[in-house]
Amino acid sequence: NKGNGPSSSGSQIVSLKVGKKHFEILAKKGAVAAYREGKMDLEDALEIDEVFYDAHKFTKCSSSDLTAAFGTSDQLDCCEKILKKGTFSLSQAEKKEKLNAQTDAVISELVRNYKSIVTHRSPSRDQVQDAIKTSRVKIEAEKPVHLQVDDIVDKISNTLKLTRHETDYTMRWDGKYGSVLSIIKRHAKVKGISKSADNIFTADVGIPPSEYDALIKELKKPTNGDYEIELIEQAQPMEKPGPGLSGFGPSTEKKKGKGKKKETKAAAK
Image (cartoon, rainbow, N blue to C red; front, side, top):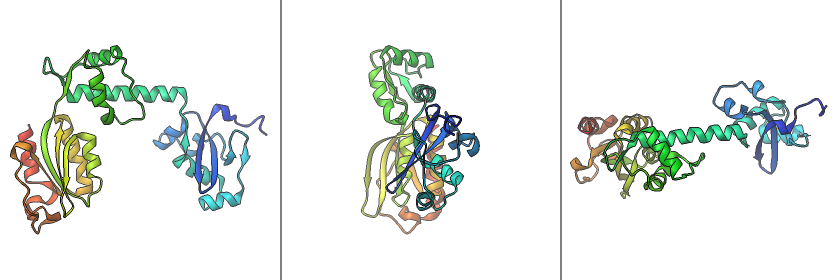
């Protein structure tokens, strides 16, 4: 009975296209993000455990189409797959919450990893917040902080002149570790990068002191410590790869990223 059932206008519609077919479910407002973060159970997140072609019109899907798309015609199982992978629109409250969280992340980044050109000290949160407000900077909720922070620093420069507080390093790793570069970019600024014929990457990076430990920790999983990191002042010309792990030389020196990496950390302090 549609009159007594859930209203699509009071719910979040989650959509998923599989092949040529379009499927929709009705979730409670704010429930999609909560479910995906493990804060809500499936049954609590759904307005109704049915799959529709068009949730606005409550046009139910056939069992054959569900089976073809999801390998089952069980409504709850199909709802779960759509809830996990589908796209949805945020409510106004969720959009505001997400923007506030992103604004806070930007301010934290500027306070933690930047310093005043005038005082050579880190700015306060109030100083950064006032500069963003005065300069009418628009922070993008969907864009990663590290991809917009340089532009924000430039836009607030008339009010607050900042420069990035970082130490320069040279890093080397085997290209077989595909996620290394994206990890580095989350914690450091890549200033130059090259790739050798034998798939060894060499990059000059600027790492803020506050990001160093987090970077090293995150690199451990994909590489098992099989990489090099040296202060720029200490970096030596890269020699022809030897017989050790990933071509970095004797495995006793480079294995698990110890040796020069540990010395560098001490030097950085």
